[in-house]
Each structure stands twice: as C-alpha cells, then as structure tokens.
Length: 518
Image (cartoon, rainbow, N blue to C red; front, side):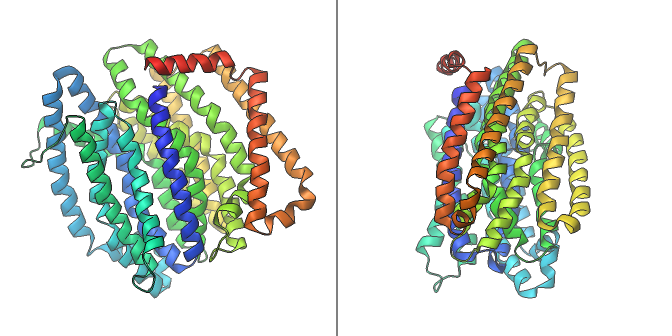
C-alpha cells in the first residue's frame, strides 16, 4: 500500500508543482479581475465533475465492481464489464454535452448568480463555460480507464494525467499571443484539449497493460446497473468536499468582484497536501480494502485503516499548522506578480489559513469514504454528505456578511470536520475502524510534535517581526522568508517527532520493508 501511495503522491505532487506554475502565470497575466473570475467559474464546472468522477463517485462504484469481477471471474468478464460501462457512458455523456451547451447561461447563473449584475462578465463566463464543457465527457471516460488501471495495480499513468492538464494550460498562456486569441478563451480551449490528451495517454497505458477496451452498442446489463446504482448516491457522498467548494463559489460570486479569484488561489495551495496525501491514500486504499473485505479479513481491514490514518495525520497535521502560520508569505511569494496586487494576495493568504484549519478533516474524509465504498455502501456517505452540505450552506450564509471573503473557506472547513467525524463514528460502529492504545498514543505524539513545530514557527516569526513589513513588501522578500521558515519548521517537526516517539528510525525502516513487500 505504501508503495502505491508513494507512486500516486509523487505524480500528484508533480502535478501540483506545475499547477502552481500555471496559477502563478494566471495571477501575473490576469490578476483577480473579471477575466480571471470568469475563467475560474468556467473551470469549476468540469473540475467539479473531474473530482466527483475521477476521485469520487465513479471510482467508488466502478473499482470495487471491476476488481471483484477480475478476482472472482477473471480478465475476460472484467474487460466485458468495463466495455459495457464505457459504451453506456459515451452515449449518456455525449447527450449531456449536447444538451448542456445551449443551457449554459442557466448553468452559469446557477454556479455564479452574482455575475448576472455585470452583463459583460456574465457573457464571457458563458462563452468560457461552453469552451470547457466538452472536458466533462473526456474526463469522465478517463476516470473509467483510470479505474481499470488502478484495479490492475498500475497507478502511474492515471496519477500522471493531471500533469498533462497543467502542461496544456501553461502552453496556452506562454505560446498563444493574446493579440491572436484572448487569454481567457485560450485557457478554456486548452482545458478541452487536455482532456483529449489525457484520454489518449490512458488508452495507450491500457493497451500496454493488455487490457484494451472496445465500444459496443450500449446495453443496460446487470453489471452496468450495479455500477450506476452505486454511483448515483456516491456522487454526493464521495464529492461532498467539492460540492462544498462549489457552494463557496456561488457565495463568492455574490461578494465584491475578485472574491472568486481570491478564494481560487487560496484553494489551489490548500489542494497541494490535500491532493498529494488525501487523493493518493484514498485511491490506493479502495482496491486493497475491497480485496480484504472480500476475503473477510476484518483484522486486516482494521490494521490497514489504522496504518493509513496514522500515515496521513503524520503528514497532514504539521502541514495544516504550517499553512495556517505561513499563509501570508506563501500567497505573496506565489501569486503577487504582474496583474495580481499585494492586497489581493494578502486576502488569499487569510483565506488559505481558513482552508488550512480543515485540512486534516478534508484528508480524513478521503480516507474514510473507501471504507464504505469497498463494501458497496454508497448510501451511508451520501447521508453524511447531505448533513455536511447543509451545514456548509448554512454557515456560508451566516458568515458571508460579517466575515466577507473569509466566510466561505471557514464554513467549508467546519463542515469537513462534521463530515469526517460522522464517517469515523459509523465506521467504528460497524467494526471496521478499531483504534487501539498504541495507535491513539502515536496520534497524540504526532499532534504534540506538530504543536511544537507550530510554536517554534510562531516564535521565529515573532523574532523577525521588525523585518516583517520590509520582507512582505515584495515577492522576493516573501520567498526569502519561506526559504528560512520552511526548512526550520521541517527540522523542528522532525526533531520533536523523534524526541516524542511520534515516529522512529526503526519505524521508518519497517515502513520501507513493508513497501518492498507490497
């Protein structure tokens, strides 16, 4: 499991680094103005489907069904199931794309109702949404191919596809002259082109794995009905975090101009640990838990979940504290360039701190959900998801006026804790999650080491208080601040963790041995 997590995490980290480069270029060229707001709304709709299908509902429904068929009946029936599902998806998604294009003004009004007050901004948003909408079909089909590859324990190609997405958008910014094609439209077209490239890359990887798929006339077979039945409620259960972020966009569109962009930049930084850790663990965990549950190995299920929780919290807790404390210099260093001024970057820093508060909960939701999906249970997460979405909406409405742009990220973080807590309680009641004293002690020591690191970072910032305004006055100063504080924080966490016994050199060696046996 650890080797698979490392593979997925490495490719996801590479994608996030390229994503930062992409967003730095967008910030420098578009800033937080109307074109940036319009593009981020246009990107939100297909991105929502990408995260729901690629990392959520479709994975949760298809991977257990495909993996169980592969293990129980063999390669040919599993291939047939994948081809049947793909054939139905092509027809349905093609129909949805054709119908969605003329309805785009309505969809845009639903996703960003505040834009209607600015006709030019609304019209641009509709145009960009139409250009990005075909990506929905392409990325959903890519999710199917990724699920097949993941079930075959070939994680690299699926994890590498977001790199293609970022390369296409960077190319549009760097290579397409704005005099030839406006930057907003160029970015939107690049989104759809990236979907074609990702689908092609995954098709090649499947062919090399000896599992090429062919389309047939669509038929609602028993296998297809099972996947669709599980997938329906799973859309909300698996993608509640993304639905909450979409609610943030709706609320942000009602706030002053530029708020959508401010929250987008903050969320992008928060997605680095969330995507690298949470997505990697959740993706690697689902096929493993499916096999263990199929073999009725309950003790192994509990051990796997405990190991995954301890591993993720050892990475996520210090990351959350560090992001909250260093949010302002991070955003100033990354995004205060060109068209994006210091005031907007500072606002994004405050929003990042609010998102960072919920980072452990965001990651744990991705970890706990496979515990239900592996049993084919998509109804329980959807019930919890409804509660979390309702809470997020209520908190957004309550906080948007007194806190302004800080209301949406804070509401999302609080809703994530509710979601993670309820999922954990139900897993424990079902007997799949059984923390023992050793596990709880280790989590306590990880928390203590993270708090020690946070205290050291706070003291270091206080020592630099006199030089802080000058350092924050330009991006180079913020970069110099990060160059000092990030290695210092890592060293403090490592020393505190070893001293408190949160992790030991023997444990690291044991993890490496486990990795070599996976």
